[in-house]
Length: 348
Image (cartoon, rainbow, N blue to C red; front, side, top):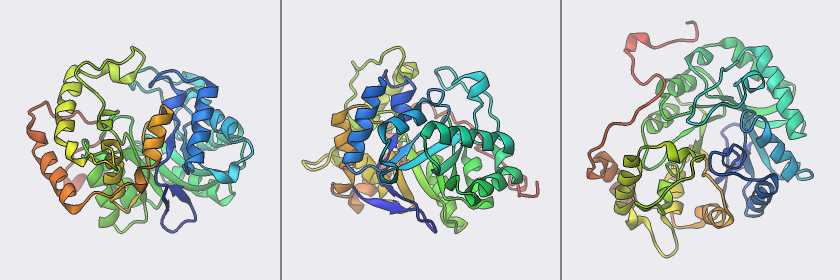
C-alpha cells in the first residue's frame, strides 16, 4: 500500500480505500454484518486505512459497521462519511438511483453530523462530505460557514463534497473548486468514463486549488475487472441488472482492446487503479470490494508496475475513438453546458 496526504492538511489516506456502499446497501448483493466486518478488518490488515461511508447508506448502517469493525482501533483508520440526504424522514431511497429529498440547511447539517458521530462511536469525522450537492449548495455561504464551524470545534478534521449520484455534474464540480476552499472532491472517474471527471480534475490545476480527489466507480461498475462475458447475468437486486444489455456487450468489446494492460505481475483491474493513481491529485480510490480475492487484488494494486507512457498513450487513443464502437452518447446529470455569461460567483 502507498499513502497520500491531502494538500495543506495532516489527513493521510491509503491510495486504495474501502467504500461501504458495496456492503451496506444491498445494491451489490446482501452482506450480513459479520460478512462486512470481516471484509473491512481484512482490508485494514492489507494496509487500507480509508473507509468511506454515508449516513444514508443503509439508513445509518454503513457508519454503524465502521464502529463494529474497529471498536478499539480508531487511530488505525480514516473515517469519511457524507451528509445531506434526509433519510430520517424519507428513508434510504429506491433502487435505480432515485433520490430522496436533500436538506442542506446549516442546522440540518449540524444535526446530521452529530448523529453520524453517535453511530460511528467516535469524537471526530476525518472527512465530512456534502453528499451529491447541487449548484445551490455551491453558492450557499452559510453551508460552507457551517463546515468551517464544525472543523473549528473539532467534530470534523476536513471537509469536501461528493458529486452524483450518476455521472455528470461538471459545473457543480468546477464551480465548487473555483469558488470554495476544501480538501476533497469525490466523483465518478475511470478509464472507460473519463468525461466529465477529467475536466473537473483539470479545474484544480487551472484555478491553483489544493483540492484533491477521491475516485469512486473506479472499474466502471465492475467492467474493468475484466471478468464479464456475454453470458454474465446479475441478480435482480443488483444495480447492474438495471443497465441495458448494450452496456454489457459494448463494454466487453472495449475490455478486449485493453487486454494489453495485463501482465504476469498486473491484472487489468490493478491497471485500472494504476491509471487513476498516475494523477498525483488523486488522493485515493474506492473500488467496489465484495470478496476477499478481489480485496487482495485491489489492495496490492499500488505495488504493481505503473503504466508506461506508451500504455497511457494507447489508452488515450482508444478512448478518443471510443474504441471504434458506435453507441448512443452517455446520459449525464447536472450542469453540463452553459454560456460564459452564466458563470456564477459567490455573490450570486
